[in-house]
Image: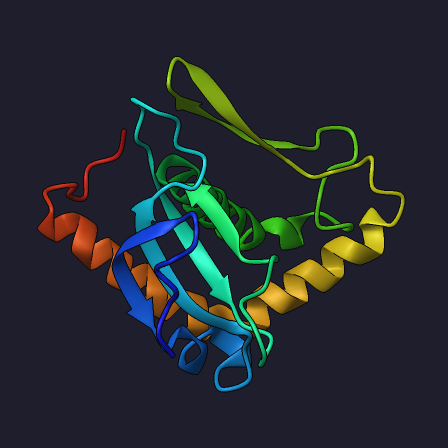
Length: 164
């Protein structure tokens, strides 16, 4: 399915037919495309680029399509990686987290930090964190394949194996 080009987000680089490989919903997904392009929020004299997930309801392009600035896409990738790393050792805690110390990490970014923590404000966290851990484990093959591809690409781009 062709991604629309007449809407406010102007696609430049596209991945059409994304629904065929969209994780566990592959073949049944409403997410039919991904694009990198000119952001819909651009003002005169200022041009930002964004990533967009294009959703199609079967009849029209959905308002639930998401557009994110590229740095947020990368921040989400960092958050996913840190969460996976955390859950590989979370079994050490009876509740999969320490209620007295819910902070997982503080990742330095842009002169500040991306704080990563278990959301103890969630009244259902004890059950929800188990459901999350189970879903993360169930999707391990899907995520691992993508993370290996990303790792290889980052290495090819010169973002080698060193830790920082």
